[in-house]
Image (cartoon, rainbow, N blue to C red; front, top):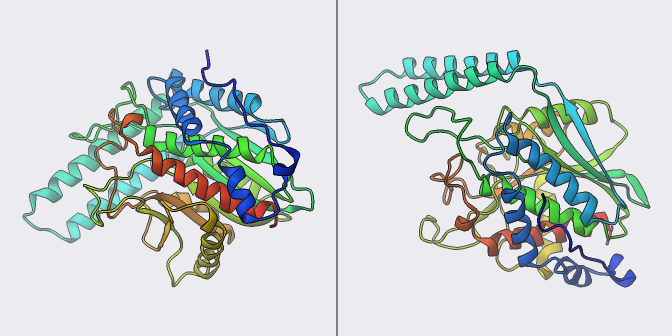
Amino acid sequence: MFSHLSHAISLRDYDKAPRSGSHLSKVVKKIEKEDLHKNLLSFIKNSRPSRMITSKGHKSAREYIVKYINSKTNKSGQVSIDSFSPDFPELIDSYKLKLSKIKASLEANKSKDQSKDKELLKVQNFTKSSIDFFKKSQGLKGHNIVWEKTGSDKPDEYLILGANYDTMNIDQLSYELKPDSKQPGADNNGSGVSVLLSLIELLSELELKRSIMIVFFDFGEVGQLGLKSFYNKYIDDNKSKKIKAYFHLKMLGHDSKINDKKKRYGNMLAYTSHNSQKLYDIESSILKEFYKYTRFINKRVRFDQSTKDFIYPDSSYFRRADIPTIIFSQDIENDYNKKRINTENDFPETLNIKTLYASYKYLAQATSHWLLDL
């Protein structure tokens, strides 16, 4: 059933505990660009035709991730499935509330601009079709996949990384939800999933001094319900853990030059708090650390800091508990993959694999450096 699950890296004892950043950079590259690309292709192939909740592919995606972790790691970490019951009535009410706010905003700014009428129609179509779908999905459970590895010296000091594995397909003309259509979801968010899977394969081999938790969130395209469930269960009830930060991986595969307003490759961003918010200084200092850690590894991407609002605002949910949060993604303002995100055309063939691999190397080098306490 599952393809590309036989090969796994196996590090020498010398490489399991790198002594420096330059040594670590060589270890990070043990997972090659071709390996990451195969991870992406295999994940999408094994979860066809869509990972929309209620679909067969959605369940297959979950099974694939668990199978991958169990077969491609040395079992030094633990993988578990954390099931939750989505609150569909609350979700429906939130969609209705958003629609009413948009209506009120447009009413307050009345004009003869027909584009605003079209915008309102799209929002109404999306809201109605979503609510109809949610009503039919009542009783469906969500399933977050959690991989955790405890550090040897500082086990209470944690880093958390996450990415959603489900998809959503929206008709680009009517803006209605299309739950039964094909949706490969390569950029959104097969790219984030493939980077996390490769990262787990690497971290399972390293002798970590600090702890790591990597989460594949369910219902990420549906109100970020998987992320909220995880937060309520693990963060509110776990005050003893010293969580350095939460890193959210979303849409790491698109990188163009022709359509990029800055006309360059590697134009990726790290979204942080605004400079007027209390976590801004901490999140900025983390990125400065990462720039220093990654000087050995990365020439293609740097993940420049952005304080602009990310298009998925609930990705920063962890800030409610004063946990520094950084969202690693493409440049939404200058090089957004708008024509393919949430459509049938989000194919792996459209992605920039060099940039995706550079993103893996950046995140692997930076996070491993801190987890190894170099």
